[in-house]
Image (cartoon, rainbow, N blue to C red):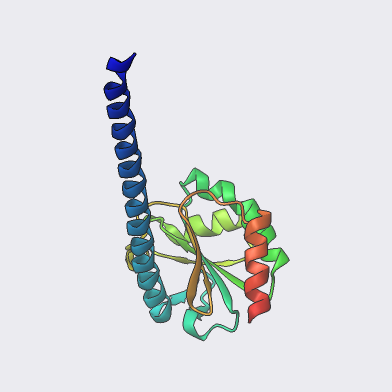
Length: 184
């Protein structure tokens, strides 16, 4: 039995070392992710301040001058199945917060974009305006390379980013929006 004690001590010490290393690496990766998110948010906020859009209905939206404190930019394309799947909840969200939150769709279709936007608006009964981004200039400003992406701003500051199909009627999300509106 005594001859196994050094082996057991070695295994325990080595296990402790590995556990400490794994925890440190995990913390370091999380800290890096937070820094990357802050950098991206700074890019989003700068792009927000300079973004001026013309919608498919020929109205002009200049985000920094909008009255709504909370603005949702929803990047989508007519061929993007996850984008289309999130539209019903986005329509309900816009109904719930009509007049309080501005939702703007940014369509990334390249060919016949206006035509495709109008077809999609009719089919999904979209109750928010969309702008076309045929040359991806807007998407590039916001570092968008895949669809769907939704970025939520409160007073020009990023409060939420989704890079997947998002349920806009999720209770936690709704609570965040309501709290942001109350704070304004």
